[in-house]
Length: 310
Image 1 (cartoon, rainbow, N blue to C red):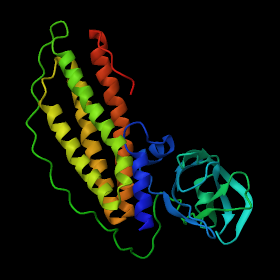
Image 2: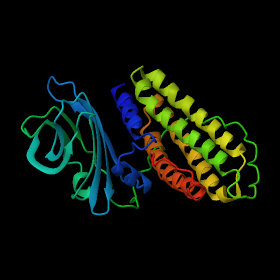
Image 3: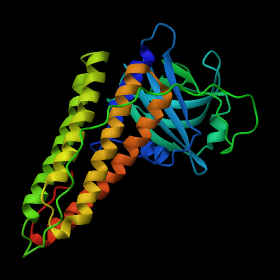
Image 4: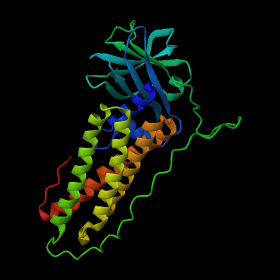
């Protein structure tokens, strides 16, 4: 139960709308299978819990931590040893989890070093490294991109199939521009879709506080809502100068709907394989959203239309 709730909380942090931490985006964009995902458990009589994701990035390691219930000023540190016997010498300082309980950082330590099965990630109350309030063992992760021979493993559980979205009508053929004719209407309609997506992302935090079932249902509902936005976008009249931007926006909405659907499944089942798929899809959607907004701006600017940065 705690594991699923922590996965849900992390997913809400990583949702599209400008809140994907850079470390997560870069780690997931490579779809590198060498990723360590693990929970942080309370130490002693404490109540702090958390979830962490570590991944290689060149010669360094990206670290993303979500801590639930951590007091302000708590810091995340990687140590050698076990949670029962932590080596007090820090191996990597991740940083202050802040008032939001989140930290994303890249530490100058190779992934192979920290994911060797002999290191932990601990939360400390400030710089008091002798006191630990939560701890999680970093799992052993193979550092070779090509798995060596070994006994066959059972395939990971698969997510339930997603119902196909409603069939969309084909996009209207682009119309010829005459002094920017049609551009303003297209830009206005397109930016309205961006605003709708942003509102969904902001609403997830509230939904999470309503409980597990409500959160999963909100994610699933949002996935369908984004599919409807995609259909609406495909039905608008497209000025000739917006052909490429239209494609970029539709690609972003399609990938974002996929990310939300995977998040809903991961939250409902606690399936860590689906969680990784959802994070990867969210990272791709983030990159597509940035590209789509830039493409819309290129269409709008020559016509004197301002496109907000966010």
